[in-house]
Image (cartoon, rainbow, N blue to C red; front, side, top):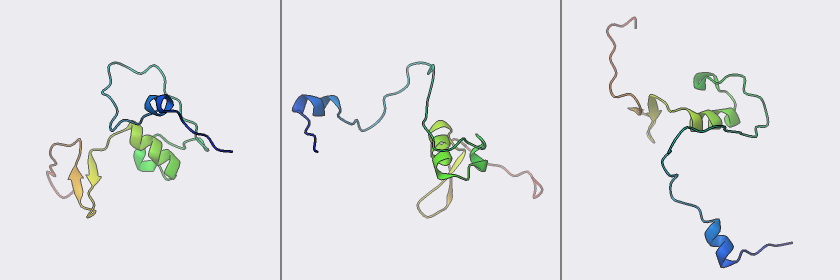
Length: 85
């Protein structure tokens, strides 16, 4: 069995290069997951599926670049007052 889209259907289902900016609060978000999240803490997300959901719902202060160096993301600066903190 195969399916062929008409030109109108293809245009209707066209993927955009980026998601439009939000215009207000979202009333509800539903994700179909194979397992229940053990935690909504991104640092505790040890399952790939849950980590993917959290990555789309939460932004990090820092990210790893392609060379695995820590780069600021939401953080604008970092300070360490002493070695204990």
